[in-house]
Image 1 (tube, rainbow, N blue to C red):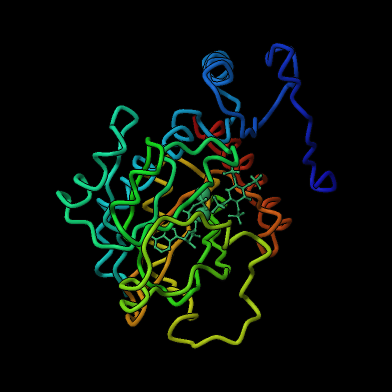
Image 2: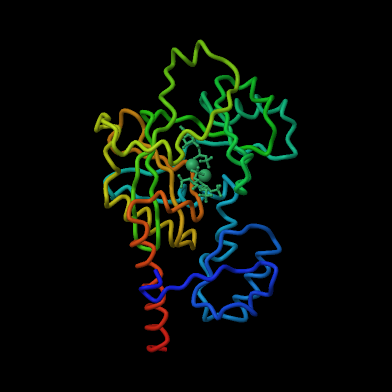
Length: 289
Ligand SMILES: O=P(O)(O)O[C@@H]1[C@@H](O)[C@H](OP(=O)(O)O)[C@@H](OP(=O)(O)O)[C@@H](O)[C@H]1OP(=O)(O)O
Ligand SMILES: Nc1ncnc2c1ncn2[C@@H]1O[C@H](COP(=O)(O)OP(=O)(O)O)[C@@H](O)[C@H]1O
Ligand SMILES: [Mg+2]
Ligand SMILES: [Mg+2]
């Protein structure tokens, strides 16, 4: 990066940000109110510095309900496919877990369900997910939760990495389909591991094309453009699944802020170009101002 004139300087969070630098860009992935105040105060005093990304926009992805809200309102029907989110129900912290079966029935959610912690804060706990085969055993879980209908997707997931205008798609192994027969024979809730982490790459696997074919490029372009705008973010990835048996019905199930881009193909060039473009666009704006 330095050969392109890009120098990374580690921020000392124990020192005032204004006494460090000067910076063209502040790139961060720290959480919490205190850090948020530091960054917001810095942005007010240094509007010339690009903050990647604004803390309020990042905060939006730290709740599994608000995270997907912007996808619900998307209308991509003229882009070679359909993108939605699975039907889901939020169980707030104040809810008594014994009421969950009633709430699930009232909402008409179809089993099996994926139970996810509502809050995503980078902790291992926020990645503790459960598969529920019957609603009664859901009362064993601890709110706040989001309960999402499990969508069969052939055991394959698409991770769509967004870095500014760049879009890179990788395939990851995921949870296998759950048949009606299995659903009728199994009951209970089962915690499952991080099945689609980096180690679960399926890019070189020999898979049924109807499952493994990448989503259409026009759909990805439009989805990325809409989400960049609605989320107000430039660095994120989207976990998307194709409904098993369909060609172009997709569901977004997770959006992650600034994930480990090291697992993204060609990330060095993508990231370098992204940072250089940011700087160049800033200079252009200054010239035309
Ligand atoms: O939530 P996922 O889909 O497993 O993606 C993770 C996630 O973004 C994770 O961030 P956090 O939720 O722990 O804050 C990333 O961890 P790092 O930022 O420490 O790398 C993982 O990299 C993401 O996995 P992936 O890059 O495969 O999407
Ligand atoms: N609604 C769903 N239908 C089918 N599989 C799902 C669903 N939600 C999650 N999964 C599976 O669980 C994995 C983790 O869920 P995700 O929402 O991405 O949580 P995390 O933030 O921990 O990655 C997904 O990568 C996918 O394999
Ligand atoms: Mg995920
Ligand atoms: Mg996630």
